[in-house]
Length: 336
Image 1 (cartoon, rainbow, N blue to C red):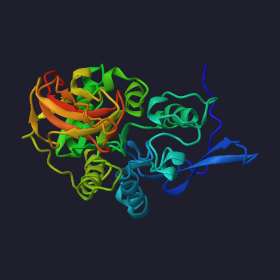
Image 2: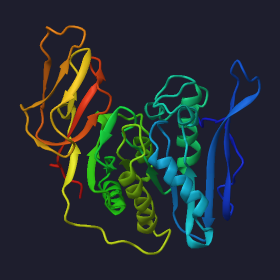
Image 3: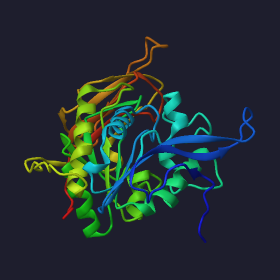
Image 4: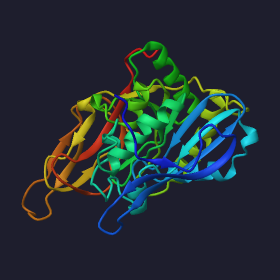
C-alpha cells in the first residue's frame, strides 16, 4: 500500500528554471493550532539530464553542508546545468535552528528514522517525505555530513555499500569524483535507518561525506565541500568542466565494531594521538580520568584495530559507551 505524506510543497519538480520555496509538514504543537514545520527547498531544472538530490542539515550541528548548499542555491544559473537539482540545505530544520544533533521537537536522530513514517513524529515525517516523495524523482543523492559537536573527523567522502555490484561501482565512482582527501567505506555496523542506506535501497547513486566537525565551521572542510559539490555535478554530467579523479589514494573503511573505541567510565577522556596518526591494535588509545576521585587511577582505553585515527571525540567529558575514537583501516574488500 502506498504511504501518503501530508507534506505539501511550494515548488514543482517538473518546472524549468530556479524555484526556491518550502516543504510544509502540518504540525500542531501547544503553541500553534494549525501550523507547519517549514523545510527550505530549491529546485533548479534545465534541459534533459540526471536529477541530483542534495541534502544538508540532517544533523543540526553540522554546518559545512548547509552553508555550501545555500551558496549553491543563490549562485547557480539554471542555464549552466543540464538536468535537475533538488536541494534541501536544512533538512532537519528544528535541529538546524537549535544547533543540535537530534530534533528538539521529538528528541529523535533524523538519520536513524528512515524510511520514516508519514503518520509519525516530525522527524519520522521528514524521512518519510524524503524516502517516499523525493527519492523517486532522483538518479543520485549527495548527503553532506560532518562530525557535529561530538566528533572531529578527517574530511572525507563516504561510500555507502550496495549489494548490487553495478550499483556499488556507481557509488564508488561518484564518491571518488567528489575528490575528498580521504575516501572511506562506512556501513554503520549494518545500520539501515540512515538517509544514504535508504537512498541506496531506492537505487540512487549515493555519495556521503564527513566534513570535519567539532561543532565549528572548518575552513578546509568547507572548501572541500564546495569543490566536491561541483565535482559531483560534473561527474554526473549536470555541468561541464570535469575534474580528473586522482588515482593515487588508499581506500579506507571503518571495518566494524572493533574500529570504535568507547569510553569505559564516567570522566574526562585524554586522547593519546592526533587524527591521521597510524596506530596498531593493542596500543593504548587514551585514558579516562575521574576528576571526582583524585586517588583513582585513570582507565586506559586500547585500540582493537590497525589503521589510522579517523575521528576523535571533541568534548572531553564522557560517559560509558561514548565514542572516543574511530579507526579507519585500508579497505580489504572488493568494490569493483
